[in-house]
Amino acid sequence: MIHTYPRRSPQRSPRPGRLAPRLAVNGQHLARMARRLTARDRWLARLVHEHKVLTVHQIVQAAWPSRRAANDRLIELYQWRVLDRFQPLTASGSAPMHYVLDVAGAHVLAAEDGKDPRQLSYRHSTAIGIAHSLLLPHTLGVNGLFTTLIARARQPHSPERLTAWWSETRCGRHFGDIVRPDAYGRLDHQLTGTVEWFLEYDRGTEPLAKLASKLDRYHQLARTTAVTTPVLFWLPSTRREAGARTALAAAHQRLPNPALVPVATTSPDAAPDQPTDPAAARWLPLTDTPTGVHGRFPLAELTRAWPHLPAVAPTSGSTADLTPPTALQPPPPMPPSR
Image (tube, rainbow, N blue to C red):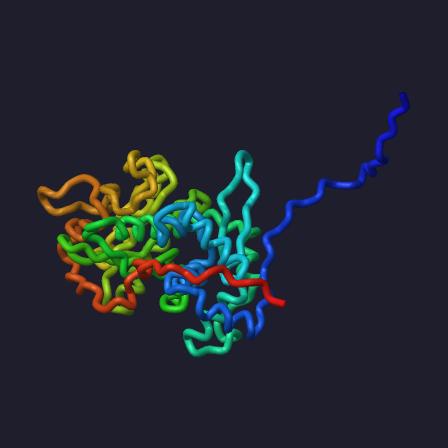
């Protein structure tokens, strides 16, 4: 029996998987979205725009009760062009889906702020371009610390509330002529009060002398603003933390007024059971602490290490509250445009 087989070109590659259908962004599409976007959808779009990129895990931490519930809604937001997504290549396994703001989401945020979309400083090519940025791991590392704090605040009867989370871009707008922190945060705790801080997130890629030289600029900022704000250094390992503390201590002693720059350090190994939780008892002050106060501090209690710091007034109003809005049942899925 003679068998014949179809001829196959050696140049032909496998057919790619079918992409989810996405809607064209026009006036009709934006109008139809008005009754389908919940307050939590809009909140998430603004959060992603502020902080450039969030993984699906970080989004679940920030706003959803489960991965499955988040995935269902994120697929719709992707199809509606509120969010775009990508999946970076990894050496083994598969990376989680990463989300950035898309064109329709930018139009929604601009309308909420009473702006023309061009005034939002948004370009889709720039937003999705972070997929190829060497700073992607750094950005995700910073964002993961803060979504962990939001997740803690979402727990029933939690005494904590993250009330401020400024991105590096926003910090640059306010302080960039002097210093550019990786983030600014503010946490209200019902029992211990309010703590605020600048974050320096280190991945071990820059010389320790350069890391320590940042204290001069934080000192200048404190003198200029007359506001003393702790600076927290997150290091990638205990070995890196030990070397950084030596360099930071030398630079700190050379400051004209070291009390203006309170410093504490940590690393994932400092709290092995909670390696990525910034609220854990992991922060080690750089300078001597008051008598009877020793060891590593939880974030909410760090001010005990610096009695000279003035008390920070609790945040008032709900506009600064980073807890997501109460979930609402969204309408049925939007039918495709004709």
